[in-house]
Image (spheres, rainbow, N blue to C red):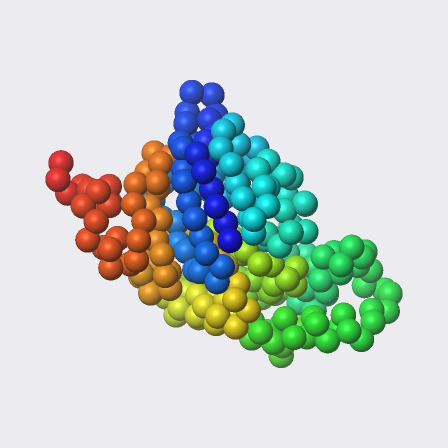
Length: 245
């Protein structure tokens, strides 16, 4: 579904992403891990259209998308949920999701205007999927951090993505909330055949959720494989644990 070849990006003299090759199949849940400064977020910025790449090629669902801007990628089904939850704090949960849904349909949200029944039903369905149906009338600024994360995922789902990019989805959550959020992502991905790529520092989350793990270090992809393969990979152990030095 996603194919990346020779992707590279520099900032001044710093090579943030250095010749990354990557293939992700439809419906796969992939984790990207690595130390701080490894190039993970820059890689996300390149495939989501936030930054142009210097070199390389990105193909999504058989079509070339290299250096297309984020709005065009969004329309093709590539949706990114950020580490910093981006909500309309004074709107209700229902209104936040409805605004995202209408935006995806090319319509303008106005909380004073009537919305058709189908849009309401779709909004209710998305909120139900993430376990927030009973809180639909709450103002989003009053949510717990965990529920804000759920709402962030709901807003992304309202765009009907085919590829969902999650930047540290469990940041700031306690272990119980982390399990719930990632269980939610797993369930939705399985039901919708949704492809998910996520950046994560919590290795318990990574090993329990990801089907495939890609490891970045100094802008390069140094290892990829199943959780079991990555756990025993000598270069990964060296980068994370300082072994072999």
